[in-house]
Length: 99
Image (cartoon, rainbow, N blue to C red; front, side, top):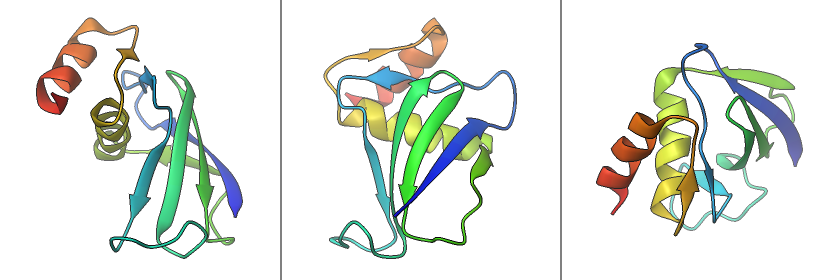
């Protein structure tokens, strides 16, 4: 798998950190890690995420639009017992929809 660095496209968007730091995305249910369409992402800072993708032609660095940042944050919040962020409104919006 290829390692890819991701950042939010807009400066006012940010990632959360969570007790379960991996967000898994797949195009079809039950696909194995390493198959095309399966990605795992983890956040390191509010502005840096690291992903493992099966597509070796993927760019080394990607800029996430608002929807992709939200998708990662929602996946992290949904599968975690604790989340943290420098933005109280972000945490409130994620915890209201996750639990």
